[in-house]
Length: 124
Length: 296
Image (cartoon, rainbow over all chains, first blue to last red; front, side, top):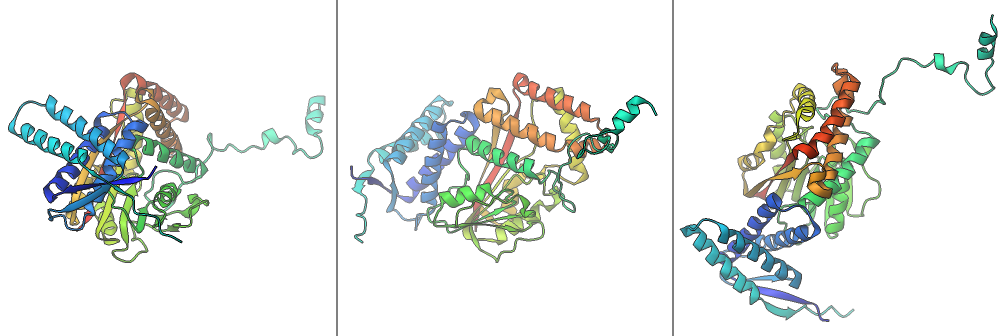
């Protein structure tokens, strides 16, 4: 099987939202979820994505590219789903609607992440 | 001279004569090695080495990773202040094989010897300044020095950590206030004894409640802070059991200094045993305070 990386095309606002979602999920997991290998795997994925976003070259640009593995994409899907569930259970207010809208946008973005084959190994 | 006296005086060759009468009235517990001329409260010996390594794994399980800052790929230089046995440095060196990981501790006696090639451990004291140039590290880390850094020195310590971190690099502080909540009367008693020891060295542990503010005061940006509750005891699963063992071992390591202040050793032991039982019943927990951010 050819290993693939996924490329997420996003603007600066979406990058900030995704970083914020990762940070929010990590805070939630540390506070509410008992330690387990599954929890820790999601925490690590969120941390890695957050770190890669922080390293994006021009964070005010509208054409940012974020690469991730399929495992990380799956982790992000779970994270966004968990955050939407949490927001959905919150009391109705303007902010909640706004946050849910942002999360739904991120979910679509992650679903649409384009597959691209990994760069070929250099010939020695 | 009676028969009994003569028999007692006839000892086999190679055995010391009447050894039982020559044992001096020594300490009632084995003596631990403590650092002199340092505020550090805990011992520095083989037992403590085991505890620190065990604690490292307990924290890794509980927090989910060896570090919490969202590090970008390609981190080159990692510095750890107060590295203890150096186990954190060794793990980070394996996780970041392209990087150089430097660990500093006031006492090199506990440094591990089986280290990856990209991991170096050196003597260095954050309270007097790390032997590093300015803006040296991409990631500077310090963990669990609440019983080593007097409260009033925390601003200096954070300033020094910022100094050795390059602009745009990350800093991370991970601490506990070394207190148990919801522990019960025996736990409260133990905490009171330990508080007396801590107060005598200015190690009240209040500064660790404001790690984010300390970073902010030194111009660090993108700061995130967390107060993570850790269940202690069997009710917290495997991680909780590991934390309980770690805390019990830490309390035991402070038995000598406590008893030197007049606490009866047996009373201390009884208290230690009772508090372990309380944690399950009362659902005790402690809190880990985390702050990380980037040097602006």
